[in-house]
Image (cartoon, rainbow, N blue to C red):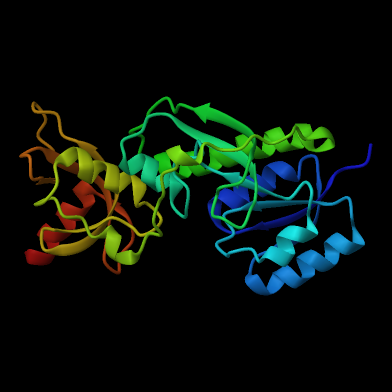
Length: 267
């Protein structure tokens, strides 16, 4: 049986996970990373008319002439949200920030308007522990894999896509480095904790601990009966314990090692 041929467009963890899954049953004939690669995308479609185009987290607006080259099937977009919710650049991060415990993946046809195309497939996903330190990376991998697995099974006969309910659309913003600066004096612990989960990798949740600028890698909400080694207080009086951190210009370390290092340097 001939494998489906795929022209893939994407970058980052969502793209990596989707591509790894697609390779199990498909032939990847080209991987586009940049806007400059789009000319080759169109050229390859002309040479391989039966090839599918799959996009996951490409980060570039696709010009109309490229979209037209793949009609009527279109460029297939793996988008990690339950569209029309969380359209835009940061759907997973925005869902975590909102405190969602149910997430989802949508496989849709790309159109000129951002994430507004009709949907081929959609499914929900509920992680066993929505407070796990690696939640963001877990969601990127799991959601992309679910979308790619469905495509692997359905390339031969894609269903007719269903239009979104555009009235219910919500939108996300592109995150910046400045978003990573935590402000526990302004927000309750529940909000700061969601930011710590959502900002892993980028823009990185940062906060000065014991006078040292740090990236917080793992943390948890403090139980009232708990006495954590290293913590900070938020606007509602509740505390967040820091379990794993990376001081500026140093390697990651646990709270005990960090505090021991401070004692050693001051003695």
